[in-house]
Image (cartoon, rainbow over all chains, first blue to last red; front, side, top):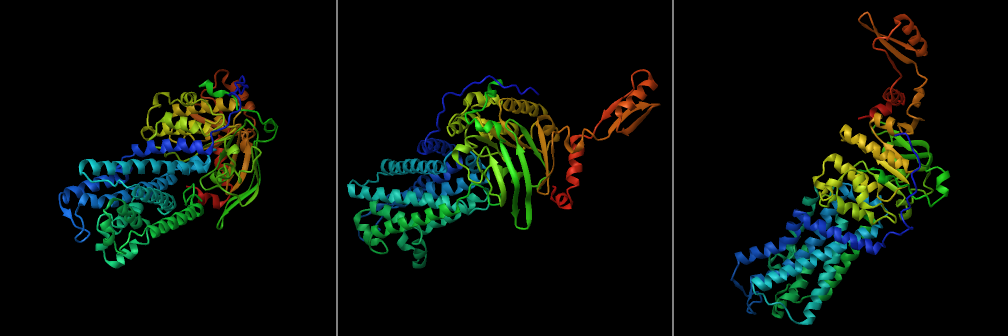
Length: 287
Length: 304
């Protein structure tokens, strides 16, 4: 035990360098996705939740035709609620998943441990973004497949609609991601994180036209919902998946694509600023 | 176990002569509390240095400043030639940290985690060898969630030594270990030190500090009150010895500065084996408790 003889020199090979920040972001994405699909909570309450809800809606209102447009074409409830569920799903796997998991990672020391390694911080965020993209794409694909194959919902064929889908998806995911990272600093402890995060998200879903018809809500509630991004994501998705006649049924009588893009970009910028200013690698009480 | 002894890369030749850690007049204040109140410290390369002190004495704050987790208010700090107040990735790849808290990454297996963390370092050890070295080879495919407390700690150590650190921080590494696991852990740390790794250890176990450390520093009320080899700490070796024996069915003891003379007398008197002979100096624990007790009332209040 006391012999500190110098061991024969075993060189560890030529001096290699660690992978780039981008490559490490890729490795972290793989790790994050693996972790996400192993955590039952996240899988059920973020990933499968919209699919389960769409299923319940279909069963409850199954077969009822809805003439939302007031004399317009009649569509099935499943088709009517599909865009809202897609928007909610994107918001759940970005905002809700990140806000909860990062709060937990800060609380249990995962973030501190990572900070103590030479891993570039940007790789951590790239991993989170990568995980959100993978899960959001997979979830949206499942929702569309579920609606199209089981409920025979007709999906749009015009490229212009899929273009709208693409930018609403990208902006919505991006805003949800940065806001989720920022919001992860709000819960005081890891244990309180799920409640502190899921409650406002659930309320937002109720007032943003995900579970109810937005135009049926009281005006003051509509005004509150219009501050937050989910309402605009749901509206953008309705413009993709509902027949054009439904545009007249919107509160403003328009799909408001320009305003949707502006609101989501503003939230994206606000979220980025908040992340840069408030992100911490250690618990607040670690003083 | 021995495969882990491969020496740290000594490519930066200048680091071999100068100190691994130099701290001068380090200060850190939280509100009215002087958590660290003028600490001076120098740790040589390859040394195992143990920092002891009661909770709230400034031990964790000092170590976390050295690790680059906290900013200091005053003083100069040099860790492997770098100011840890401005940590760089290159510097981080030369140090290893085993935090006091354990946890996280619950759903990943031992092998997945070790392989992943190995990617962060430019010249990482072989993940399989490291898993073997910490004794987790039969837990490779076990998720972190299902490891016992001691196994979890070994995983922490595995992640800490992956990058062939020149300097390894161990913050209360064996809390919750059974005696056998602690012995195995000590062997591992000694083999790392044998390979040239400098080790900073904080612990509440004085036997651990005595067994492992080349030098021990005792911190109380934000100041280092004693610093020496564990056998010499606080004038331990020169302290009066206690000679004890059994005579006429009673236990006799003498506290003396000349234990050899007493033993000679006893040997002459008994002219045979001296029954129940024992000679003891103050233990490290005795010295430690005296040192932190003398540091003033503030320190006593901070003890939990």
